[in-house]
Each structure stands twice: as structure tokens, then as C-alpha cells.
Length: 394
Ligand SMILES: Cc1cc2nc3c(=O)[nH]c(=O)nc-3n(C[C@H](O)[C@H](O)[C@H](O)COP(=O)(O)OP(=O)(O)OC[C@H]3O[C@@H](n4cnc5c(N)ncnc54)[C@H](O)[C@@H]3O)c2cc1C
Ligand SMILES: *[C@@H]1O[C@H](CO)[C@@H](O)[C@H](O)[C@H]1NC(C)=O
Ligand SMILES: *[C@@H]1O[C@H](CO)[C@@H](O)[C@H](O)[C@H]1NC(C)=O
Ligand SMILES: *[C@@H]1O[C@H](CO)[C@@H](O)[C@H](O)[C@H]1NC(C)=O
Ligand SMILES: *[C@@H]1O[C@H](CO)[C@@H](O)[C@H](O)[C@H]1NC(C)=O
Ligand SMILES: *[C@@H]1O[C@H](CO)[C@@H](O)[C@H](O)[C@H]1NC(C)=O
Ligand SMILES: *[C@@H]1O[C@H](CO)[C@@H](O)[C@H](O)[C@H]1NC(C)=O
Image 1 (cartoon, rainbow, N blue to C red):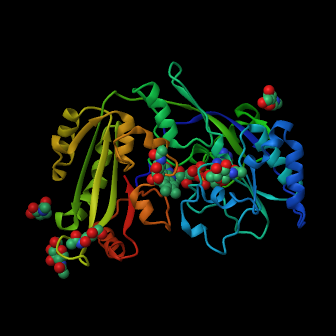
Image 2 (cartoon, rainbow, N blue to C red):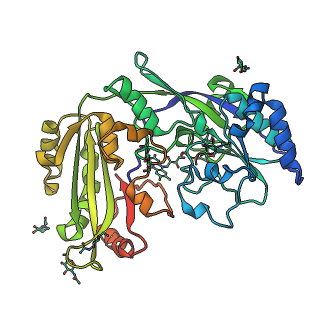
Image 3 (cartoon, protein in one colour):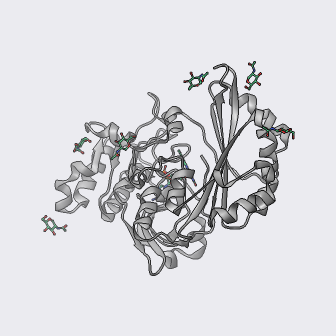
């Protein structure tokens, strides 16, 4: 899976809750006190629907709510620490009540939007301290303003929902975010902190920018984001071509690192490395490098461009497909192309994630090209039966 990082897109506004000091208390009753606090903080309307907002370990739906966005079975083991309570706010005031009550009764708080954290920090705890999850999955409204070319997006919205919402309105605007459609907005751009609602002005420029990449509930709970959209052509082009080790994949990969900086700005090149068995023998496996590239333009421009900078890859018109931007997200995200509604399906996982329920992932920036011998060193590890897939983006 390629990771598309939206370096050109900035949140221009956000709402923020803060709380810096966290009292350390260890009362066995803190849990009951917390629940009492929460139910008295909610309006009478909300109290009647508290069963839709609050899940304790005794609730029949506790496990399904907890696991609804746990994508990595490494974090669902008998020894995993579980939250005392999960709160699934339907309104901003519910978030505030949860934060206030957890502070008051000495419970740690984890903020979860889409649960895609690589180390599960939005829902697991390394510490003994009892904790509460505020799960923002229901706060997911999206408001696309075509005229102003912006969108307001609540933290619990998944990327797929935003791509879909934009595409429903217009073909020529887009938000370049994660390829994995289930990644949520909250974690994609932000990170954590807690109490008063602040905006960019009252939070101050330094902190406003610091939250990008802060991570792990360290700053606040971001509720909603206003993002700029970018203009894209009505038709973009995607090519996809695969090479095995026997077809010189190693040499092409190595060369690719020196080629991509010659690409124009409107190009998103990515490579996925997988393994496959050769036709002859199940046990004789090989590595396949799939070169996937999206270009903000037509095939008749892309083909000569590729032939010029990277003739070794031999890209022809047959390798290219013209489509809308949102369709290109399906292709690059390895989603089936048949219907756009798949972007709205929060439980859909691409086959290779289904095949690897337990995984270790890491995003990194490579500053120096990997030498050919570096790739050669990776292949035996990839070809081990346990590690079938590695991902990469250039
Ligand atoms: C299978 C998979 C595929 C991925 N694909 C891509 C990809 O294609 N492109 C890409 O760029 N990245 C990708 N990622 C990485 C992903 O963008 C980050 O892990 C991101 O932080 C997940 O956001 P989330 O809201 O889904 O996760 P969460 O686990 O809910 O949150 C991640 C972190 O942000 C904090 N947080 C969440 N919501 C808020 C909030 N509202 N306010 C404050 N803090 C908050 C959490 O406490 C946690 O520390 C992928 C991850 C996985 C597991
Ligand atoms: C409470 O619910 C009633 C009936 O559904 C509704 O008319 C009223 O506006 C609600 N009040 C609040 C504060 O949401
Ligand atoms: C529990 O989950 C079931 C099935 O998803 C749902 O029908 C039911 O409304 C849920 N109950 C509560 C209290 O959330
Ligand atoms: C691999 O590279 C060699 C040497 O350049 C070349 O002769 C051969 O045709 C290439 N193989 C494929 C499948 O492209
Ligand atoms: C290769 O792998 C596939 C999928 O795992 C399997 O169905 C097939 O039997 C294997 N062997 C060959 C020779 O294709
Ligand atoms: C494995 O497959 C490759 C490609 O088909 C072939 O060149 C090689 O000889 C095979 N090795 C074995 C041990 O079968
Ligand atoms: C969403 O995806 C899941 C998992 O693949 C599937 O079982 C379900 O039918 C899909 N839902 C819809 C509405 O398509």
C-alpha cells in the first residue's frame, strides 16, 4: 500500500479541546464516579440515549464497539489492556463531558477517530492506569463548498467518505489524502490535548502548527477541520505494470529512485512489492514489483513522458487507463473499481490486509537511494513464508 502524504494540504482551521494537568488518582470507584459524572453532564435528551453513547465492559456491544476499528490483531490479545469505558459521542458536548469527567475522576483518555494508528495508541494503553476511549466515529459530517474550494470535515469521517462527498459534487476538485480509505481524518492530520474549545487564533500559531505530527492525544481532541481542496483535471491517467525478479525488477527499482525526481509535479508514483509463487512450483516464490503511477493529465502526454525518462519500463498506451480522480484513488488504493460506494464501506478491507491480520507498519522517508545490494538483501526476508508483503511509495 502506498502512503500518499498530503504535504500540500493544510488544515486552515480547527476546533480544539485542552487540558494540561491530569490528576493521578487510583480509586476503584473512579469508573462508577465517571459514569455518574457523565450522565449528569449530558442533557436529559442524551441521558435517555446513554446506551448508544456509553459502553462499559458489561455492555453486550462493548467488544464489537472496541474492535470496530481495530485493524491489527496484535492489539487484540488476552493480555491487551482494555478501556473501562468507551464513549461514542453524537454531539460535541458529549466529547467535552467525557473529557471533563475523565479528568475529574483520574481516568486516562484515548482519542480514536479511525483506529489506524500503527501502534494502536488510540485504543491501547501501555500503563496500568485505567482509561476511557472517546471514539469519534459518529462525528463524521462533511461539508464540501465547491465555490470556495474548501471542505469542513469532522474528525470521525474516513478518507473514503471525503473522496466520495467531493466526487458527488464535482470532478475537478480533490483532496489528496490516504490511499487506505478507512483512515480517518482525526488521526490523519492531527493528534491529541484537552477542556476549552480553542481556534487557531486563541491556540497560537506555534501550537497550531505543532499539532501536525504531534500524535497520541498529547495536545487535544480535534473535532473538525477546514481543508483546502485542490484542482484536478476531469480526466487523469493511471498506469500499472509489474515485473518479477526474473524480469529485472531489482534493476528497475534501483533506477526508479533516480527517475522520479524528473517527473512533473502532477505525478504520484508508487511501487508495491509483493511476492508470488512461480508457475512451476508453489515453494519457488518470487518478488513482484508493481509500478503504479497516477498522472494529472492524459495518456497521450504520459506515454511519451515515460518513454523519455524511463524507457526501460516500456510503458505503452496499453498500460494506461484514463479515469476520474476519484476512480484513480480506487485503483491506487487497490479497491475494486465497480462502484464508488465502496469508499463508504468502513468494514471493507483490501485482500492483502485481510490476509495479514497481524502486522507491523512504519512510514519513513528515505533520503539516500537504496543501492541494488540493499534490495537484494531485502528479497530473502520478503520471500520467507511469514512476510509476504512489503509496501513502499516513491
Ligand atoms: C492499514 C493502514 C493503512 C494506512 N494507509 C495510509 C495511507 O494510505 N496514507 C497515509 O498517509 N497513512 C496511512 N496510514 C497511516 C494513518 O494515516 C495514520 O495511522 C493515522 O494517524 C490514522 O488516523 P486514524 O484516525 O484512522 O487513527 P487513530 O488510531 O484513531 O488515531 C491515530 C492517532 O491520532 C490521535 N487522534 C485520532 N483522532 C484524533 C483527534 N480527533 N484529535 C486528536 N488526536 C486524535 C490518536 O489518539 C492516535 O494517537 C495507514 C494506516 C493503516 C493501519
Ligand atoms: C429533546 O428532544 C425533543 C423531542 O425529540 C426535541 O424537541 C428537543 O429539541 C430536544 N432538546 C434538545 C436540547 O436536544
Ligand atoms: C448492539 O449492536 C447491535 C448489532 O450491531 C445493534 O442492533 C444494537 O442496536 C446495539 N445495541 C446498542 C445498545 O448499541
Ligand atoms: C533484463 O535485462 C537484460 C540485460 O539488460 C536484458 O537482456 C533482458 O532482456 C531483460 N529482461 C527482461 C524480461 O526485460
Ligand atoms: C500459487 O499460489 C496460489 C495462491 O496461493 C495457489 O492457488 C496455487 O495453487 C499456487 N501454485 C501454483 C503453481 O500456482
Ligand atoms: C524458480 O522459478 C524461476 C522462474 O520461473 C526459475 O527461473 C527457477 O529456475 C526456479 N527455481 C527452482 C529451484 O525451481
Ligand atoms: C462492506 O464490506 C463488507 C466486508 O467486505 C461486506 O461484508 C459488506 O457487505 C459491505 N457492505 C456493503 C453495504 O456493501
